[in-house]
Each structure stands twice: as C-alpha cells, then as structure tokens.
Image 1 (cartoon, one colour):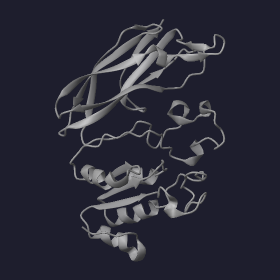
Image 2 (cartoon, one colour; image 1 turned 90 degrees about the vertical axis):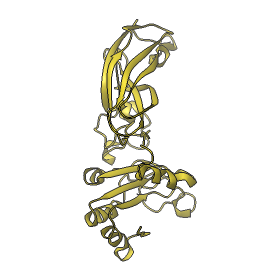
Image 3 (cartoon, one colour; image 1 turned 180 degrees about the vertical axis):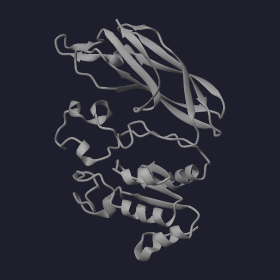
Image 4 (tube, helix red, strand yellow; image 1 turned 45 degrees about the vertical axis):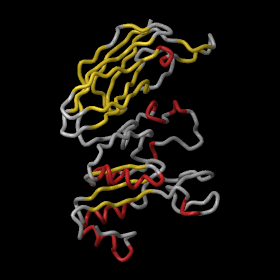
Length: 283
C-alpha cells in the first residue's frame, strides 16, 4: 500500500501511477480545520454562521491528475453536503460518498471498498449539476424550485440515489383502486436480486397528483423500506400509503383535506428511477 497525504511534489500522482488501484479521498473538513467562528478555508465550505458560496469541489483538479496517472481510480467524497462533480461522474469509474462518521468511518469505507458488504446508503439531498440551478439563498419558498419535489432541472445525482454491488428487478405490482379519508392502503410488489451478491435495497414510493386543483409537488416520497434480498432470491415487499400523508392544508376549511381525484404512484430505487407504477383514486 502506497500513501500520499497530498500532491506536494507530485506525491499523489506518483503514488497513483505505481499502484494497481488509486483511491483518492477529497471533501470538506467538518470544523474548517479549526478556524475561528464564521471562517472557512474555501468558498465551497459551509458551517454555522458561514453560508456556502460555491458547490464546485476545489479538489477535483487532484482527482483529474490521479485519474490521468491511473485509470483504475476510486473517488471517495467525504463531505457534509453535495458537490457539483460533473467531471468526476463522467470520467471516474467509481464514486463513494460518506458523511462525517467519526471513528468508524474508515472501517465502514474499507468494508465497502473490499466487498465485505454491499453498500445500500441513499442520498438524502439532491446533488445539483450547477450552482445556477439553485434558488437565491434567501428565497425560502420551496415551491419556486427547491428540493427534488419542485426542482425542474436534471440533477447530477437525484434524491434517494445509491448503488449496490448487485442489481434488482421490481415486478408484479398490486394496489387497491381507491383510497378514502382516514384509510391506509398497501402497495405490494416482488423484489428480485438479479446479481451475484447478497444486498440490501432501499425501495421508495413516490406519488404525483396529476389533476390537483391546488399547487402540489411534482413528486413526493411517501414511504420507503430497506430490504435485504439474498442473491438470486425474490422477496414480497409491502409499502404502506396513508390517506393522511396525501392530504393538503385547505385554507378555507382550515384543515388537512384528502383531495378527490387520481393519485399516480411509482416505486423505484430513487426519485428519478421509476420501476413500477400505478394509480389510486382518492374518494
């Protein structure tokens, strides 16, 4: 194993060139390297009292140099927030994202990189491809295009995204045809591990309101479940959809109301990956 703390004197490039596989770790320091209150090292950093001024990753130049020295490069992004790493997505064979996970971070990363476990983490934020896809910082109206629910841009990585060392097939969806106030319904389907590795999958249920008379999200997550599926096997999965989770605030009645009409749903592995779908009528 060859280690380089940085690229001073081309140390990282030389280490990558002499290795079978290069692993380059970049990201942000959770405490801004011990700087005082309200200070950061680079514009893309953010913490208490400091708003981020950029979402580009300054260290992506190092990633480019390492990748040029060794095509078998794994990019590890250890960060508290998303970055616009379009070049890395296009050119780097594998990308792993971790948040600041204290003393077990290294062990967890090693377990994933060496195949001891199949990763099943999912993004809890949309990773935008460019800073101009974001709203002005002080625009707090989510309906103007903030989050996966209202953003019309194609993301770099969508909300809920994540890969595993296997693949999954979704099939045989079933659901009731109607839903009434204070009721719950079950969305059922089969989940098959079609690869050669035991793994978890995070199945996600999203809904749309195609004929709503009020402004609603373009999609909204309403249920999810982490399911372990051995290689080659099929598991029957059920997701609960509650009427109260589909209600909106009616300003006239001053209450949450289930709006009559069609509710389209899909189940998949992220907000941008619909595998199976259906429709329920709210009555």
